[in-house]
Length: 294
Length: 95
Ligand code: SF4
Ligand code: SF4
Image (cartoon, rainbow over all chains, first blue to last red; front, side):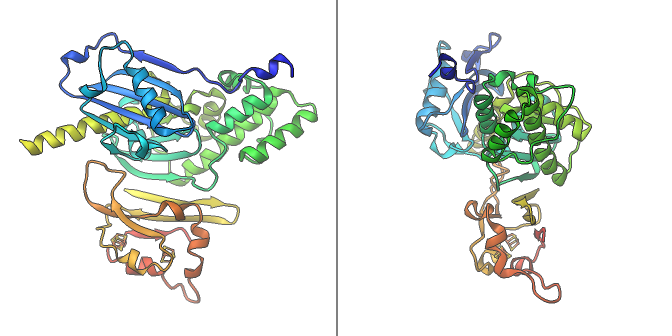
């Protein structure tokens, strides 16, 4: 084995952040949203509905453990502790396995709510491109879902698929999008299913295609696949993309081109949308309970 | 809200759509369905509301083409049993 083979090309950068302008000690309602996806887990803490701190890391083999590690990392050095969080919401694929969550909420509702916070109330269509599936969502000015569509059939061809490709072509996952922007756009690969696309890619490489062109063909295929999903639901402006693939300019720019529409640049990590939505629902549920209690 | 469950594959589009604004959670579609494709649950897409609505079970979402095959309308466009059972007309199918 040569040394290059041990490089983990698929490994994206985990991160954490604390808002320097907020102090949780002044807060009335502290809530958390934990999005345990098949590939990544995010923990977000919001004070009075404002983003206070977060962590974004890889999901481990065990959902409860991933949720615990994510919230602990998010809270690191903030002085804030789990017992001060009034309401935590679990979302994503592992949502029912968040030990400290009071409630599990589907990621469709959370992504719409999160996109509304991140991109503003003009967002009407949200495309969530997650680790293992993608969902097209329509929402109103409050981030409430008005329609949704997900392609349940083939779970492959999204974030996880991109990791497989990065690994296969030995290109770092962060560079895949940029590298795929070639001048002579090739035909998309015929399948976005990881297994088929992988063997198709190997075939193209053997034929002498550059890595860049193979990546272009794959990103184009992925973009085309989600555009069909979006078109069935109907796209209304403004349009935003959430989830890990939102950071892949190769896929995003091709979706924009096919739809003749521009998605706004995210001001926070688009992978956080689900967790942010969860934390905001937490706040709304606390307010609702307080109102009831009088 | 229009909740679409299902998928599109090489042979066609297989979606069951529940209009949750029309659905009153009566459960008649659930009782009519011979395959257990439908269920009535809290509206998961609107966590702040507490009303019940119908949805396609997780288990059947990936295979409704097959699950619903026994119900394929025959002869003159007879309505599917679940669609027929739904008084508020909240259920539609893409086929
Ligand atoms: S078409 Fe038949 S099997 Fe399918 S949901 Fe309706 S009643 Fe059930
Ligand atoms: S029969 Fe119609 S109204 Fe009743 S639960 Fe089913 S979809 Fe809803």
